[in-house]
Length: 131
Image 1 (tube, helix red, strand yellow):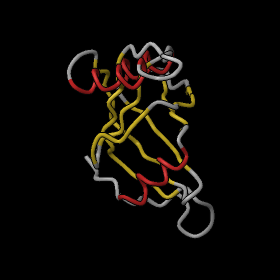
Image 2: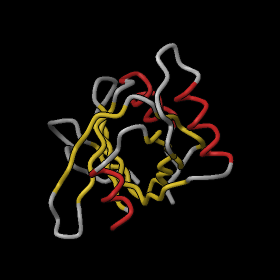
Image 3: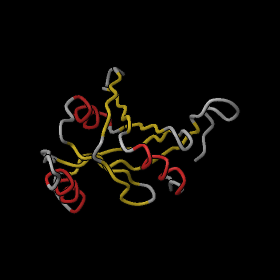
């Protein structure tokens, strides 16, 4: 897996709500916005499954996800993902979801291990692989 530099993690954190893309086995794309997520470590982004219907089905089917952020730089990360329904990451996801002012279901966590990082700003270097 790939270690995500601090400046890229900070760019994602600054955006707060991030697009998450998946595709099913036939290649049909799906993109949603996720608002409850966190960086677990330098190579793992976790998403709380509150209402991930097609997205979760796609993760279960092919285990690939992609995120993009923009603002303080623009970056795309590609990940290998799996669902956690027990253990410490599930417990953290559940707590983040249910201990809010307006509680959410917190059904599971989608654990995304970063495998590739790309520059996604326009101009020179657009689309270049960073890691």
